[in-house]
Length: 156
Ligand code: ADP
Image (cartoon, rainbow, N blue to C red):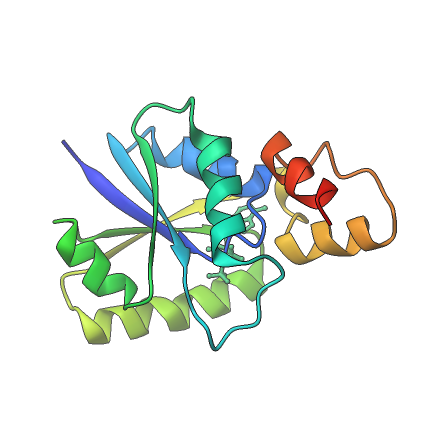
């Protein structure tokens, strides 16, 4: 069974994230969505809400589970017995950021193998921050996020 970790803030999870996840399942049998628990990074949704939204969004996708860690992603990967880390790329800004991150991971754990999936054109401009901005402006976000995210926003 091949396995990979898909780490991120998922604040909130979007259809762009889900698209990367589905692409990854074409390569790996099992993918763990790892929701970042970083108290130093200000998030829009609590860890609990981000986990609820992600879990609900992937509940019908075989081979996917959702977890969180306050530790290092590379340590989590080791604990899960995998060296594969998935990330998504939308543009050259992402590329620059991801390259830096990949080098950091490699420095911490040389066996790590990064696997990047390119965003589909329709998701290339989609980000969690864009969703939040649209929501704050009262726009319809239902085309861009799973229902679980709409449900969480309704509670606000
Ligand atoms: P982080 O704060 O760790 O970057 P994000 O939740 O913003 O967490 O993103 C997690 C990963 O998913 C990143 O590699 C990011 O580039 C990728 N990603 C985010 N949105 C999209 C999208 N619309 N299409 C493809 N990849 C995406």
